[in-house]
Amino acid sequence: MSELLPALGQVAVLVLLLALTVPLLGRHLARTYTSESHTRLERGAYRALRLDPDADQHWRTYALSVLGFSLVGLLVLYALGRLQHLLPLSLGFDGLPADGAWNTAVSFVTNTNWQWYSGEAALGHLVQMTGLTVQNFVSAAVGMAVAAAFARGLARTHGAGRVGNFWVDVVRGVLRVLLPIAVVGAVVLVLLGVVQNLAAPRLLETLSGGSQSLTGGPVASQEVIKQLGTNGGGFYNANSAHPFENPTPLTNILAIFLMLLVPFAMAWAFGHIVKDRRQGVAVLSVMAILLVVSVTLLTWAEMAGPGSAPALAGGALEGKETRFGTAGSALFGAATTGTSTGAVNSTHDSFTAPGGGVALFNMMLGEIAPGGVGSGLYGMLMLAVLTVFLSGLMVGRTPEYLGKKIGQREIVLVAAYVLATPVVLLTALAVAVTAPAGVAGLQESGPHGFSEALYAVTSASNNNGSAFGGLTSGTPFWNTLLGLCMLLGRFVPIIAVLALAGRFSSQRPLPPGPGTLSTHRPLFVVLLTGVALVVVGLTYVPVLTLGPIVESLS
Image (cartoon, rainbow, N blue to C red; front, side, top):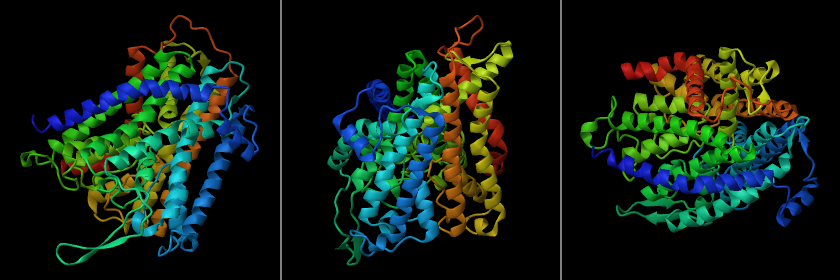
């Protein structure tokens, strides 16, 4: 029991912080995406970009804006990576290889932040700040914008397929939400010991008479948006296990809090946007239930499960930092895979087989517990539409969600969303475990080697970014394959979400009739939770059996 006290204490602090802040930020998010007024700073940005902020976009135009904006970001970041040896503040750093620059550009533009390289050794300060950190802000703002557009589609009547203005949504998401919190958070992190400077590496003499290079940099400013925007790309190769990024248990709790803050608040904001707070509470409840189950199972697996060695008074300590302990590492692991963050404060490859399986399952859920900033909300809402459709079939009524009819075209878009990521993931996995170049990157054979490949393609396809450390991924094969997984896993679902938002926007709301499923009651929360688990179970149990399940039983 004494071993569980640290875990319970950390969870209690986290719940208290979220309970105090999520409703406040949720209301602010709702105002951000529904207000018709613009600040002077925002109007200046619109004039510079030559945009009409009052123009309402059709969903197709909105989708093209998302794709165009992301393409420009990808090209700019690719160029920065390839040409960084010519840039100031990057002296001594070589340009990235073509496949590595491609993978990095795709990774940060898609909010995945998969890193095949060692950050402090491969990228200079300028690329870290103007390339990676900027994309940490705008890729998160894109996800939030898409979620806001979907909520508007449900809330509007006679919208003629219009779902808002993408450029306004992105600018507001950065200026009104992400940037203010990031500024305050970065100051707090500096006060708690996180490094923030522009100094060159310093050569220090160690106690043993040797020498060591101490690398500093703009760490706190990147660290805060890395967590807040559910990005996950670390300044250092060790990510949040590095003491310069995450020095104490207090910063560890703060990092987890930042990961969960915006995804939960987006669910609260949804209730305000559709003018029924109970709908937001229902969605948030499902997210919370799935996260609690994940934290419980992962903590058990690492502290008392098979291979955890509970007799060592701490559980499975391999690959974990002693300053966080097993409980702090398990909580972080559940949060980072339940969101689309992908940051790590321990080596997931060293998790027990059941613990690694829980982390995999979290990502396979589509990261809806509570998911990424924006992507968690629209992912959960797509499953909510599927739940209503299945429930309507069982009682013989035309299914509807918030008064919007779910017909053939609507459910085809939902099916496209649900199937897109599994198709990408399983196809990539088949290629990886059959191609010699893919197998060569695996550190181990057997079930654990299979899990390494499965974890990599799952992380990329679901835009998470964490990895099993045993995979050697910095090769042309893996950089190219995982880059394709990230692109398809990000933008194919987004197009389906926006198309469905456009269809809902064009509909007149139907009055609720007898037998209509109430989507704010506990029954719906149970049904939605069940559908989320069943969809994942039916899709991924075979591959989980070949990896973590077989390893657990062996």
